[in-house]
Structures are given as structure tokens and as C-alpha cells.
Length: 321
Image 1 (cartoon, rainbow, N blue to C red):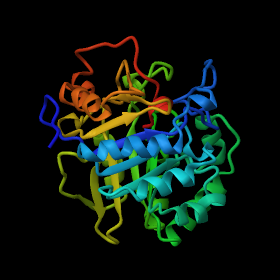
Image 2: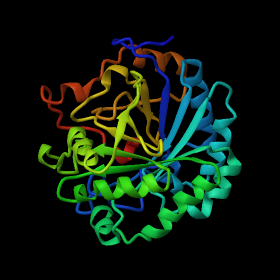
Image 3: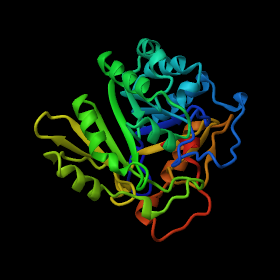
């Protein structure tokens, strides 16, 4: 078993398929900033991704998370999925998307072998959603795509980043809506990922506050947690539907972090809050290269947030959430 300096195994590989996105969410890629994106020929090809994943499997990776930017902007997404799901040793492949282009490609994604989808929904109000994502989105079509995916047999989760002053008044509404649809909703504390989102503690709605608000409307209990779990998991008592809270700011889970990230141009990042990446070599022993990086890993930014300061952090759209 490959372990880092804090005895954490390598189990999950998050692959960013593109740094481009059709939205400009305030917490990730605010619209008032200038961005430079990778050229098409700088992106990893489906063949390269397949080969890299095979190497990671040799080192212990069992779960793949396909992210972006917005991964549905990749025309060869289905080919990538088809290649990855066939790799011996991979137990789970999931796609994270904003859902805007999801509905028209659900059938192809299913045929490619995808079984798990996570969709980002931060408001159920079209006007409020527009203020968060800064683009005109047919919110109802995205919500219909989520239900359609569920009905097609996909395991579906919904992520909602909660930002004070933007959508925190919708916590109950979001919970009630997805509870009624029997879809797992995960609230996410607003994180200081990257450098462009003007993050501050004042905008963070903590896990404890989210739970306090939910407890006024619902009865639920907490489920057992594994060290590697990113979310605190809960279950409603009346219908057994689950919800979760990803509390990276107030309840860090660095001690069990078994994830490594791969950017769309083939750089390894050992933490979501990394200040640098490691370019995968075109020649040489890739397995030994990855092994050395992981064995020297000691990242635990969220646990040390108040003690360290980084001028530079990789932007979230470069490595996925």
C-alpha cells in the first residue's frame, strides 16, 4: 500500500478534463477577472488519460472522479468514460457537472458505462441562480435532467455551495426540494480555493449553522463516518433520504484525505489548495514519479488554514472541486 508522510493511502484520482467552463460562478471563476485557458492541443487525450489511470491503479487508486471546468465541454467525454470504466481495478467512476448540457447526453453517458453523476445546484430561484453563476441558465431544464438521470438508474447527488448573503436563506428550501425527489443533497461550506473568489470567513455558513437551521424543520440523525469521507452524512428519520455537509473550513477532513488531482494538461496536485503542480513526464518511469510525489506528501491545508498563508493557490477550475 502506497502511503504519504501522514500514513494516508492513495485511493481516489480526480481528473480535470478541461479548465474551461460555460458558467462564471462567484466562488470559482468570477466574471470580473481575466482568464487564460489551455489550448485544445494542450489537453490530455483520451488515450493519455487511459494510460495515466492504469498507472495510478497500480499504485492503489480505485475511484475516478471526472471534473473540470465543465467536463461536458469535452466532445470525447463518452470515449474517456468508456476507456476508464474498463480498466481492471477501477471500482467507481463519477462525473461532476453544472448540468447545463447534461440532459442531451444522458443516454450516451449511460451507454459509455457511467453510473454516478454529481450536479451543482446553488439556488432554486432562477434570478438568484443568475446572480451566483453569472450566466443565463435554464434552471428548470437542469433540474429535469437530474430527475431524468435518477430515473435512468444513475446514482445522483447534488452539490450546493452556501454563501452568506447569496443563498443561505435557501438552505431549508433546497433540503426540502431534494428530499422530496429522494436525491442526496450535499451542502458545501464556502472555501478559499484559488485566489480570485474574494473569499472571507464572514461569507462562510458553517456546518453547525446549517444543521441548526435544518433541525428547525426536519428530524435526522448522523451516519457513521469513515476517515476518508469528505462529507458529514445524515439521514432523515421519516423517509431515510440522505443529505451531507462538506465542511472543509470548520471541520477539516485532511487526516483521511486519500485524493490526488490531475489537471487537464497533465499536472499532479496533491491538495485542492496546492500552490504548485508536478508535470507528468513524457518519458521515464511514470509509476516511480507518482510514487515519489505521494510518499513525500504532507498536505493538510484546511487543518492549518489559520496558521499558514499562501499567496498562490491553484484555481478550482484547473483541478476540479
